[in-house]
Length: 281
Image 1 (cartoon, helix red, strand yellow):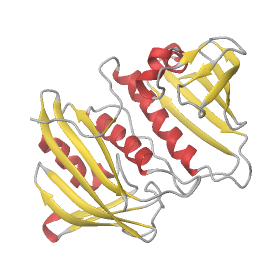
Image 2 (cartoon, one colour):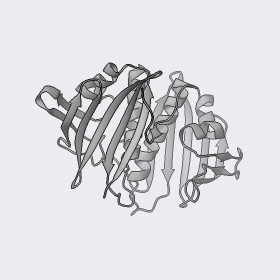
Image 3 (cartoon, one colour):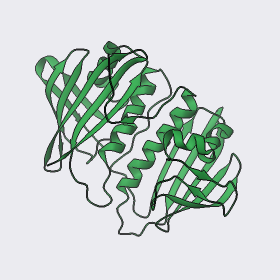
Image 4 (cartoon, one colour):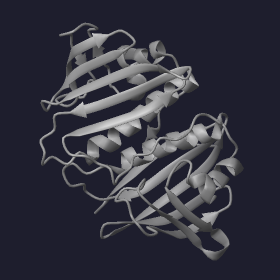
């Protein structure tokens, strides 16, 4: 039996604005998919392109049900599977809670996860509804052997961005689970992920560069540069074996960089996409 993925996010917008964002082609292309065609009255809800898992080159979704300002259900064709997806909206005292439920199948080693896809996408949606900076997309056709590279612009100073990489409290907000950081070359750098994740700092230049070792003999490096009043970041995770698929790391790093971007740009009110269910009223 397949498992169910459940995620939710709260956005400061009313359900009608959120519903429009999840059912309008031009909006869907700003947070979820490269290509979209929608006509709910005709039963059409089609997504495809390189930003969806599997990078389908033809419509991979089919509408199941649409209830205005309340819910949208569709199926996603992934490999040989037809996976049901539901997007449910409910009001809260902070705006609208959008809950995503999707059936998922067991992944092959190195494959990207739908958890990372939806985390990245929902963060894009949040910024879209906040009129914030643009989306980040994982291009599933551009997964490379040996390394993962993520480059983007964050509307914040290098000091603010670097704090998100070196301050344990900030790391815990978007990526780590009880992070430990000894901020010096050779110092411990740990996300609290058990036998997974980073190990120790290899290079550290305050507000400029951070490099650390990873559990599987790979290395992660962050470089920050002043750019257009903000910070250009380049993250490279390198050293993978040539036959090791890096799709899982590629999707995961795009999600976490997107979380870091929102955390810096939105500020103290930001909370990461949550797993599981939540009460609504």
